[in-house]
Amino acid sequence: MGRNVIELVGLTKKYGSFTAVDNLNLTVEEGEIFGLLGPNGAGKSTAILMMLGLTEPTSGSVRVCSIDSTANPVEVKKRVGYLPEDVGFYDDYTGFENLMYTARLNRIPEIEAREKVMLLLSRVGLSDEAAKKAGKYSRGMRQRLGLADVLVKKPEVIILDEPTLGIDPQGVTEFLNLIVKLSKEEGHTVLLSSHHLHQVQKVCDRVGLFVGGKLIAEGDINSLSRKIFAGEPFIIEAGIAFSSQDASDQSRSAEEDNRITERLRSIKGVTNIARDNTLFRISCSGDVTQDIARAIMDSGAGLTFLYRKEYGLDDIYLRYFEGDGENK
Image 1 (tube, rainbow, N blue to C red):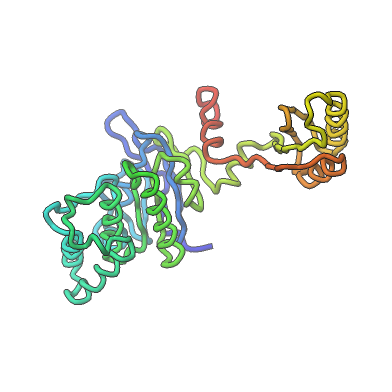
Image 2 (cartoon, rainbow, N blue to C red; image 1 turned 135 degrees about the vertical axis):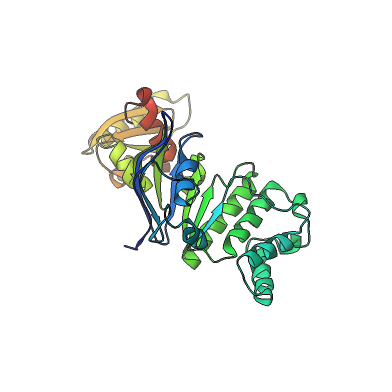
């Protein structure tokens, strides 16, 4: 277990009678990529602003890198790199010049800054665009330049607020792969705020579901799915290749179908079998994938594929909000 780099305890932010963040308790460990997941307006950005010391909480505490963000916001900013959803650059400066400007603000010596800036531009795939005006950069290029800008001061923590909005699919993949590489190779702790479930699932070690200012669930994908879908059957789909696929030989096909079905029903833990042509959908109380494969092969039929359904963030998210939010 690593040390906690972000610690939020009872964090609350109210604007008059409106509660933007409601009693948020959260820890993020060193070197971890944590996904703060929720719809627009959930309060994610407000929580981030409190982490950065850019707005004060109504109650509760927030510590980043063991520093109180409310009492010492400047010290927190020295250790945290923040990439908002819309990065601001001087459009009439080149990518290189923008990063040099940031380096000078951080009092990095000129020679060291030049070397560092060129290295970072290479790291984010912008070496060939270093002399191009930032105003001519695409959305994806601006986000990569923003990530390089964040890295200029060697932050301990990187906070990304909806960083992939407006980027094409290939650009999103490249950006997310870069985030993972930075975290795993250089030990950066990353907090990624997003409402794109599949993107978060691809890169995050743990996720938190944040809705209406409240953290309603937190953990890795597997632990969340086990908790939410506890008691529900394993679903295993099997593609069957019958020895007779001739429609005119219906009696033989029916006989083979019955033989496979009976063998599957005899497996301990199988609770239901549904068939759609050559696809068998088998519900089980436990993981009996190997037994199912063996039964199909022993029946004399062929097995074209075998797939055990895995519950992802989409399933988890939908389950929390079905029934008008009964799982909140």
